[in-house]
Image (cartoon, rainbow, N blue to C red):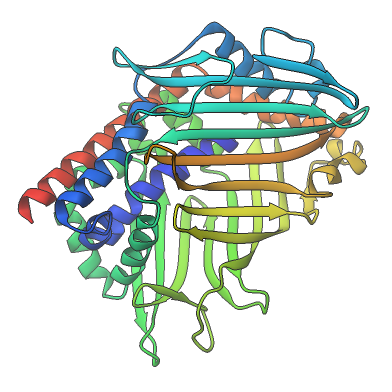
Amino acid sequence: MRRRSVVLLLAGCLALPLVAGCRAATLAHGTDTRTAQAHLDGLITGFEHRFTNVSRQPKVQYGRMRIARYAFAPSKLVDDTAIWTASRTVRTGSDRAAEWQAGLTNNQFQFSARHEAPLPTRVGEQRHLIAVTQRGPDDWFWHTVVEHHVGAMPPGRATDVARAFFASAERPGSAMRADYRDAFPRTVGALGRLLSIDSMFATSQLDGSTLVSMQIRLNARGLAPQFPAYAKYLQKYIEPARYRYRLADRLGNEYFDAQAVNRVLTVRFRTNQGALQPLAGQARPMPDTLILTVDAMAKLGLFSVGVSNMVGEFVHVDTPRERAWQVRFTREPKWHLPLIAERLLSGAIRRPFEGNGVYFKLGLRTGPSGQTISERIVDVAVKESAIMRWLGNLGFTAMSDFAGNVEEEENRFLVELFRAMRSDMEALVRAS
């Protein structure tokens, strides 16, 4: 489920600024039209390759499924030498790592296991590291890094694209609709089978800022004719999900609110010349460090599980060579579990939020050869127990349902989307 969310987020991070932000957000990828095209083409190509006819070496496929099955019970993994590419025994316990390299060869994106895999040097290539360390009798720590070569766009351009997107919302919704339908017809057609912008309202404020509300509808039925297995999976796991993400400063001023209920995602923000302002009250610059509050509920099999009031520190990393979001959750949320699981509750469910907490990072950085690397990092501690094994079993059920036809269809859908984006960008450059 976590991978599904990240995949849709990455696709949305590319597609929605283009569609909703129209020409301005697209051309902000470079200092001029041709540079913008080259930078955006690198980004699109990198992700298109990732989902093109994916194949995995048996060692990688085996390790992938076993780690998914026992992520919350690592003791069942450490002695399985078929998973790991590196291992050692340290004084405090076991230390294992699975390292995978991937890239496009003969029109197949091939994953292979490789010890000390090099940093990607060609567009589309990836390097994966999944490491687990034992810190006590039942205490484990997972460290995951995924690095992906996505062209040569300087990471700082991501900030320019975001500002252009928010600035483009400072106009009537009708103007935005006309713009994206005219500029990105192929992208709208490809993405519209799953997502559609139901409404866009821009309300001018007395201080010159604009309060924006957008409603994006998720409807997997539009995918059914071409991708029936993927549509069925989304209807089972993604459409019923309810979640809310809120960003606020330490004084409680909210800057961004995204809430999904009944297949409709409502996004609210206030912008002035592309800079976010508090949703209400006096305008003030948005700080680099904010508070992220998450509420989420999902249906997994027969059970509904979720959290509310999961609070973490959200930091916008802004350096000459990197733009990234990093989040750290150090406060246990309120859990929403069925009665059968509540009987298993123990201190183990608090363990991920203790110490350094749950850490997540997503961003772009400049590599040593000038390439742009998309980087995703996840750090989480796990204490084995009955409740954690139960949660792990639920997550693996969704993973098992995904592997096979569903994943193959999702890959084809995403490749079609990225190719549509490239075609629209080429047409926009010719028109410019």
